[in-house]
Amino acid sequence: MSDVMLWTGAGQIGMAIARRTGFGRKIIVGDKDPGNAAKVAEIMRNAGFDIEAAECDISSWESVTAFIRKGQEYGEIGALVNAAGVSPSQAPVEVILRVDLYGTALLLEEVGKVIRRGGRGVTISSQSGHRMPALSREDDELLAMTPVEDLLSLKILQPENIENTLHAYQMAKRCNVKRVMAEAVKWGKRGARINSISPGIIVTPLAIDEFNGIRGDFYKKMFAGCPAGRPGTADEVANVAELLLSEKADFISGSDFLIDGGATAAYFYGDLRP
Image (cartoon, rainbow, N blue to C red; front, side, top):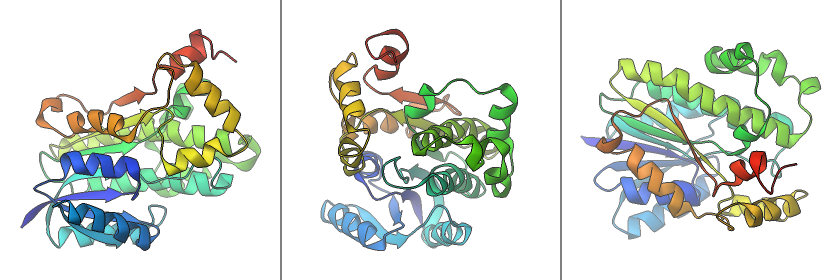
Protein backbone atom coordinates (compact mmCIF):
# COMPACT_ATOMS: atom_id res chain seq x y z
CA MET A 1 0.00 0.00 0.00
CA SER A 2 1.17 3.53 -0.82
CA ASP A 3 1.50 6.72 1.13
CA VAL A 4 -1.20 8.84 -0.48
CA MET A 5 -1.23 12.55 -1.26
CA LEU A 6 -4.62 14.16 -1.82
CA TRP A 7 -4.34 17.25 -4.02
CA THR A 8 -7.35 19.43 -4.79
CA GLY A 9 -7.41 22.23 -7.33
CA ALA A 10 -5.65 21.22 -10.55
CA GLY A 11 -3.86 24.52 -11.11
CA GLN A 12 -0.36 25.93 -11.26
CA ILE A 13 0.21 26.38 -7.51
CA GLY A 14 -1.02 22.89 -6.65
CA MET A 15 1.08 21.34 -9.40
CA ALA A 16 4.22 23.19 -8.30
CA ILE A 17 3.74 21.87 -4.76
CA ALA A 18 2.96 18.33 -5.92
CA ARG A 19 6.06 18.22 -8.11
CA ARG A 20 8.21 19.17 -5.11
CA THR A 21 6.59 16.86 -2.56
CA GLY A 22 4.70 14.10 -4.37
CA PHE A 23 7.45 11.83 -5.68
CA GLY A 24 7.34 8.41 -4.02
CA ARG A 25 3.69 8.89 -3.09
CA LYS A 26 0.48 7.93 -4.82
CA ILE A 27 -1.07 11.26 -5.82
CA ILE A 28 -4.80 11.69 -6.31
CA VAL A 29 -5.54 15.02 -7.99
CA GLY A 30 -9.10 16.27 -7.78
CA ASP A 31 -10.81 19.16 -9.52
CA LYS A 32 -14.42 20.22 -10.00
CA ASP A 33 -13.68 19.90 -13.72
CA PRO A 34 -12.46 16.30 -14.19
CA GLY A 35 -10.98 17.34 -17.54
CA ASN A 36 -8.60 19.73 -15.77
CA ALA A 37 -7.59 16.98 -13.35
CA ALA A 38 -6.95 14.58 -16.24
CA LYS A 39 -4.77 17.08 -18.12
CA VAL A 40 -2.64 17.82 -15.07
CA ALA A 41 -2.36 14.12 -14.22
CA GLU A 42 -1.07 13.41 -17.72
CA ILE A 43 1.59 16.11 -17.39
CA MET A 44 2.69 14.74 -14.02
CA ARG A 45 2.59 11.12 -15.19
CA ASN A 46 4.81 11.99 -18.14
CA ALA A 47 7.27 13.48 -15.63
CA GLY A 48 7.47 10.22 -13.67
CA PHE A 49 4.85 10.69 -10.95
CA ASP A 50 2.36 8.05 -9.83
CA ILE A 51 -0.90 9.96 -10.13
CA GLU A 52 -4.59 9.44 -10.75
CA ALA A 53 -7.22 12.05 -11.63
CA ALA A 54 -10.61 12.35 -9.97
CA GLU A 55 -13.54 14.71 -9.78
CA CYS A 56 -13.70 16.69 -6.53
CA ASP A 57 -15.99 19.61 -5.77
CA ILE A 58 -14.84 20.76 -2.33
CA SER A 59 -18.17 22.49 -1.74
CA SER A 60 -19.93 19.10 -1.72
CA TRP A 61 -19.70 16.68 1.22
CA GLU A 62 -20.52 13.77 -1.07
CA SER A 63 -17.79 14.73 -3.53
CA VAL A 64 -15.15 15.31 -0.84
CA THR A 65 -15.82 12.04 0.96
CA ALA A 66 -15.82 10.10 -2.34
CA PHE A 67 -12.49 11.71 -3.20
CA ILE A 68 -11.01 10.69 0.15
CA ARG A 69 -12.30 7.12 -0.28
CA LYS A 70 -10.60 6.95 -3.68
CA GLY A 71 -7.32 7.90 -2.05
CA GLN A 72 -7.79 5.27 0.66
CA GLU A 73 -8.04 2.58 -2.02
CA TYR A 74 -4.28 3.01 -2.47
CA GLY A 75 -3.16 3.35 1.15
CA GLU A 76 -3.13 5.71 4.11
CA ILE A 77 -3.61 9.44 3.58
CA GLY A 78 -0.25 11.01 4.41
CA ALA A 79 -0.48 14.45 2.83
CA LEU A 80 -3.02 17.05 1.75
CA VAL A 81 -2.45 19.90 -0.70
CA ASN A 82 -5.55 22.05 -1.06
CA ALA A 83 -5.24 24.61 -3.83
CA ALA A 84 -8.90 24.69 -4.86
CA GLY A 85 -10.84 27.93 -4.95
CA VAL A 86 -12.36 30.76 -6.95
CA SER A 87 -11.39 34.43 -7.10
CA PRO A 88 -13.49 37.61 -6.67
CA SER A 89 -13.69 38.07 -10.45
CA GLN A 90 -14.67 34.47 -11.16
CA ALA A 91 -17.79 33.94 -9.10
CA PRO A 92 -20.64 35.64 -7.20
CA VAL A 93 -20.65 36.10 -3.43
CA GLU A 94 -22.57 32.93 -2.64
CA VAL A 95 -20.23 30.74 -4.72
CA ILE A 96 -17.11 32.28 -3.15
CA LEU A 97 -18.45 31.58 0.33
CA ARG A 98 -19.59 28.08 -0.61
CA VAL A 99 -16.27 27.08 -2.21
CA ASP A 100 -13.52 29.10 -0.56
CA LEU A 101 -14.98 29.26 2.96
CA TYR A 102 -17.28 26.28 3.49
CA GLY A 103 -15.43 24.01 1.06
CA THR A 104 -12.03 24.52 2.64
CA ALA A 105 -13.45 23.97 6.13
CA LEU A 106 -15.20 20.81 4.97
CA LEU A 107 -12.08 19.39 3.30
CA LEU A 108 -9.80 20.07 6.28
CA GLU A 109 -12.28 18.47 8.67
CA GLU A 110 -12.88 15.34 6.59
CA VAL A 111 -9.21 14.75 5.79
CA GLY A 112 -8.43 15.38 9.45
CA LYS A 113 -10.57 12.39 10.36
CA VAL A 114 -8.38 9.99 8.35
CA ILE A 115 -4.90 11.55 8.14
CA ARG A 116 -2.26 9.09 9.29
CA ARG A 117 0.15 9.68 12.15
CA GLY A 118 2.94 11.88 10.82
CA GLY A 119 0.68 13.24 8.10
CA ARG A 120 1.01 16.82 6.87
CA GLY A 121 -1.18 19.27 5.05
CA VAL A 122 -1.15 22.70 3.47
CA THR A 123 -4.08 24.76 2.26
CA ILE A 124 -3.78 27.83 0.07
CA SER A 125 -5.40 30.93 1.55
CA SER A 126 -4.64 34.50 0.40
CA GLN A 127 -3.14 37.82 1.38
CA SER A 128 -6.72 39.16 1.17
CA GLY A 129 -7.50 37.73 4.58
CA HIS A 130 -4.75 39.93 6.03
CA ARG A 131 -6.10 43.15 4.45
CA MET A 132 -9.53 43.45 5.97
CA PRO A 133 -10.02 45.08 9.38
CA ALA A 134 -9.69 42.83 12.40
CA LEU A 135 -12.83 40.95 13.43
CA SER A 136 -13.94 40.64 17.02
CA ARG A 137 -12.58 37.77 19.05
CA GLU A 138 -16.09 36.31 19.08
CA ASP A 139 -16.40 36.41 15.28
CA ASP A 140 -12.94 34.90 14.82
CA GLU A 141 -13.92 32.08 17.16
CA LEU A 142 -17.15 31.51 15.25
CA LEU A 143 -15.23 31.21 11.98
CA ALA A 144 -12.79 28.80 13.61
CA MET A 145 -15.12 26.62 15.64
CA THR A 146 -18.65 26.63 14.17
CA PRO A 147 -19.69 23.17 12.90
CA VAL A 148 -19.06 23.03 9.17
CA GLU A 149 -22.68 22.61 8.19
CA ASP A 150 -23.62 25.73 10.16
CA LEU A 151 -20.87 28.01 8.86
CA LEU A 152 -22.84 29.63 6.06
CA SER A 153 -25.62 30.49 8.51
CA LEU A 154 -23.38 32.80 10.56
CA LYS A 155 -24.74 36.34 10.81
CA ILE A 156 -21.47 37.90 9.59
CA LEU A 157 -21.76 35.90 6.34
CA GLN A 158 -25.31 36.89 5.45
CA PRO A 159 -25.86 38.91 2.25
CA GLU A 160 -26.66 42.14 4.09
CA ASN A 161 -23.24 41.95 5.81
CA ILE A 162 -21.15 41.15 2.71
CA GLU A 163 -20.39 44.22 0.60
CA ASN A 164 -19.17 42.59 -2.63
CA THR A 165 -17.23 39.63 -4.02
CA LEU A 166 -13.90 40.96 -2.72
CA HIS A 167 -15.31 41.23 0.80
CA ALA A 168 -16.68 37.68 0.51
CA TYR A 169 -13.24 36.49 -0.59
CA GLN A 170 -11.55 38.30 2.30
CA MET A 171 -13.96 36.72 4.78
CA ALA A 172 -13.36 33.30 3.26
CA LYS A 173 -9.61 33.65 3.54
CA ARG A 174 -9.83 34.96 7.11
CA CYS A 175 -11.92 31.89 7.87
CA ASN A 176 -9.33 29.63 6.22
CA VAL A 177 -6.61 30.86 8.57
CA LYS A 178 -8.78 30.56 11.68
CA ARG A 179 -10.01 27.14 10.59
CA VAL A 180 -6.45 25.90 10.15
CA MET A 181 -5.69 26.93 13.73
CA ALA A 182 -8.70 25.01 15.07
CA GLU A 183 -8.07 21.99 12.85
CA ALA A 184 -4.40 21.88 13.89
CA VAL A 185 -5.61 20.99 17.39
CA LYS A 186 -7.68 18.10 16.02
CA TRP A 187 -5.01 16.93 13.59
CA GLY A 188 -2.50 17.04 16.42
CA LYS A 189 -4.46 14.40 18.33
CA ARG A 190 -3.71 12.09 15.40
CA GLY A 191 -0.04 13.09 15.34
CA ALA A 192 -0.49 15.16 12.17
CA ARG A 193 0.03 18.79 11.16
CA ILE A 194 -1.84 21.35 9.04
CA ASN A 195 -0.79 24.87 7.99
CA SER A 196 -1.89 27.51 5.51
CA ILE A 197 -0.07 29.67 2.98
CA SER A 198 -1.40 33.11 2.02
CA PRO A 199 0.06 34.10 -1.35
CA GLY A 200 -0.07 37.57 -2.81
CA ILE A 201 -0.24 38.16 -6.54
CA ILE A 202 1.01 34.93 -8.11
CA VAL A 203 1.00 34.64 -11.90
CA THR A 204 -1.55 31.91 -12.63
CA PRO A 205 -4.63 31.73 -14.89
CA LEU A 206 -6.72 32.80 -11.87
CA ALA A 207 -4.53 35.87 -11.35
CA ILE A 208 -4.72 36.73 -15.04
CA ASP A 209 -8.52 36.74 -14.69
CA GLU A 210 -8.06 39.28 -11.93
CA PHE A 211 -5.65 41.41 -14.00
CA ASN A 212 -8.31 41.55 -16.73
CA GLY A 213 -11.21 42.08 -14.33
CA ILE A 214 -12.73 45.16 -12.73
CA ARG A 215 -9.92 45.34 -10.16
CA GLY A 216 -7.13 44.82 -12.70
CA ASP A 217 -5.55 48.24 -12.23
CA PHE A 218 -5.62 47.78 -8.44
CA TYR A 219 -3.77 44.48 -8.65
CA LYS A 220 -1.19 45.80 -11.10
CA LYS A 221 -0.57 48.77 -8.79
CA MET A 222 -0.25 46.37 -5.88
CA PHE A 223 2.55 44.27 -7.26
CA ALA A 224 4.31 47.26 -8.80
CA GLY A 225 4.23 49.10 -5.47
CA CYS A 226 5.18 46.26 -3.15
CA PRO A 227 8.78 45.96 -1.90
CA ALA A 228 9.48 43.06 -4.27
CA GLY A 229 8.24 45.16 -7.20
CA ARG A 230 6.73 42.19 -9.05
CA PRO A 231 4.21 39.39 -8.80
CA GLY A 232 5.31 36.01 -7.51
CA THR A 233 5.47 32.57 -9.08
CA ALA A 234 3.90 29.27 -8.17
CA ASP A 235 7.33 27.84 -7.49
CA GLU A 236 7.96 30.47 -4.84
CA VAL A 237 4.82 29.31 -3.04
CA ALA A 238 6.02 25.73 -3.46
CA ASN A 239 9.31 26.65 -1.75
CA VAL A 240 7.40 27.26 1.48
CA ALA A 241 5.01 24.33 1.00
CA GLU A 242 7.99 22.01 0.54
CA LEU A 243 9.28 23.03 3.96
CA LEU A 244 5.88 22.69 5.62
CA LEU A 245 5.34 19.22 4.18
CA SER A 246 8.76 18.00 5.33
CA GLU A 247 10.10 16.73 8.64
CA LYS A 248 12.00 20.02 9.00
CA ALA A 249 8.68 21.65 9.91
CA ASP A 250 7.58 19.13 12.52
CA PHE A 251 7.23 21.90 15.12
CA ILE A 252 5.01 24.02 12.86
CA SER A 253 1.25 23.53 12.91
CA GLY A 254 -1.76 25.82 12.90
CA SER A 255 0.25 28.62 11.29
CA ASP A 256 -0.26 30.85 8.28
CA PHE A 257 2.59 32.01 6.03
CA LEU A 258 2.14 35.28 4.13
CA ILE A 259 4.00 35.24 0.80
CA ASP A 260 3.20 38.49 -0.98
CA GLY A 261 6.44 40.31 -1.77
CA GLY A 262 5.74 42.70 1.08
CA ALA A 263 2.47 43.97 -0.43
CA THR A 264 0.55 43.71 2.85
CA ALA A 265 3.33 45.58 4.66
CA ALA A 266 3.15 48.32 2.02
CA TYR A 267 -0.65 48.38 2.29
CA PHE A 268 -0.52 49.19 6.00
CA TYR A 269 2.73 51.13 6.28
CA GLY A 270 4.01 52.07 2.83
CA ASP A 271 3.20 53.22 -0.68
CA LEU A 272 0.07 51.09 -1.02
CA ARG A 273 -1.75 52.67 1.91
CA PRO A 274 -5.37 53.36 0.86
